[in-house]
Length: 379
Image (cartoon, rainbow, N blue to C red; front, side, top):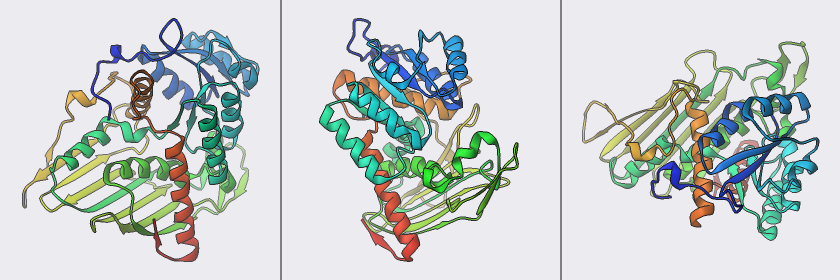
């Protein structure tokens, strides 16, 4: 993991300004709420261009954030000589076209997670990026949050002793049978943009980065909302996309792991993570799986026997970037951009890449195999 630095030390980029000049494909809510504000916080970045299938959305973002170019097409954006890196912030089925265009133009590229709609396409894009020599980064930002890095260090430093068990429950209220028009893209199963694709991808990546991948597991993927209704239009979409995941298995060293991820939970949704060792325990909670303003993680722990849990405060050194009033989910993204700039500057490899995305796609394939065949699988 990269050494702690003040954010003014992270510059990156290969142009005279020393900044990574970014062109953005996609001007949706997450671009406006997360990506652009994250890059504005970091002196090593400059957002210079934006493109959207909805020109009015790109114009609005450019006006709000002072973005120099509103590009009329993806080709125009990726071939802009002032763009060093392309951030592909569209939906998963659209990622491939944007990534291929960026790589063809010789630009470094960021892609949101879910990466693509299949492992095959993910592997093709990884190979293309490797062969072209462009730098690539995937939006699995939770692994770099101060919370996740601090927990990982506590475990490595022996706070809980030998790991015995891990239990994770993640739930969200808004992905129910009735969804807003803005969430229509989460319904079609083939788009790989459903509840489990999004949230399991993010939370499993962060968890496995902390405790390791399972050596064997059994999973159940269940669809309890076979018909999704769009609230504004009444459109009904038949879907086989899962909204429940239950996974149980073993980690290296005989520790056990259980994961439950569910969409459409009416009340008391959020994140609960329990990590047990032979010398102590950790409990991590959040009232939100997304992480809005004020929705920060609470870490509690005890080292010893039969002790009450006490609040553990994350040391300041883990907070690479701080911004009062910014949601914890957006700050996780800021940490990813911080790490990527540091990787470019220092030759480190802390930001997750397309290789990590392919690894997660393959894990989903194994989960699907386990659920479909009713078998335990071994990695």
